[in-house]
Amino acid sequence: MRHELGRVTRERAMDYWDTLEKLIFENGITIDRPKGTSHPRYPGMIYRVNYGFINNTRSMDDNEIDVFVGESEKKVNGIFCTIDTLKQDSEIKVLYACDESDIAAIGRQFNESDYLKAIFIARG
Image 1: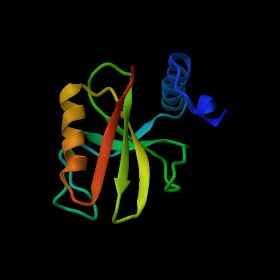
Image 2: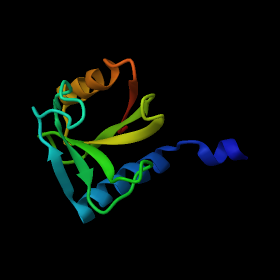
Image 3: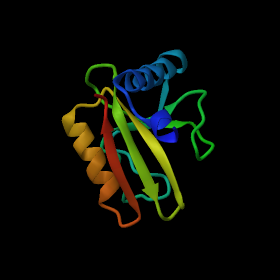
């Protein structure tokens, strides 16, 4: 029974992506780390794509839901699921209006560290 409840059907997946887009549409996005700027605590880490958060939301770290924002079609492209062994946590990072090169750059950024790993789940 538990297996069936967690099974991802096409309908359930569409609901998930539509709900993320609704959060963005209703709350807006704040970009607090524009492309080309460095991380406040790790100056060697340069953001390759605009980075910010979805306003008025909460994620597992008790901060807003993180989002990378590209310059392509205005839609949710997918999410990165991350594991950070320094912070001992995991999170999702939403990708919005990102093209293939943005997604690849974000993936490289996450996975080039020994402490941070991520996988991408594309909107189907």
